[in-house]
Image 1 (tube, one colour):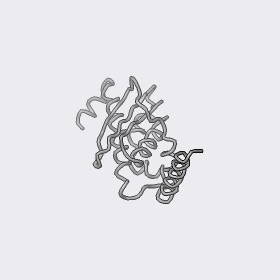
Image 2: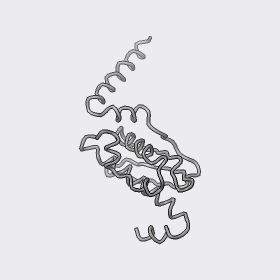
Image 3: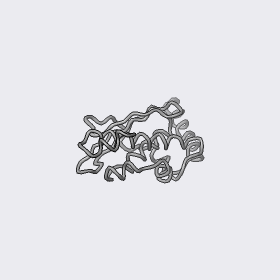
Length: 152
């Protein structure tokens, strides 16, 4: 092992230890293995939102028979943006559109066993982006959804 390889391995170990001090194991898992972090081509619903911290989050949905059969996300943000986007798409997959639209920041935080207070806004960003992606899908459908959502 070269000195550079050894340095990189030690740095990764230190970073992981630091993350584990401040975040739950579920957060660490979603950070190390985010669920579906990719652009989906030809989604049925899509939204892009920017959070108060400047992070962008994008959510893509594939919906069949009124259910989210596939969900993915992209973000240019920090660790907490990654994990909240990952949890949002994990929670949405398999649910009907009404259930997916109802996923709240609290649901995302609970799914991750919490985040530090200064990072909770990322869960709000993920929830808001998910709701907007569902809305995009519903607006593309026939009545009566358009009447409901054109009022928003």
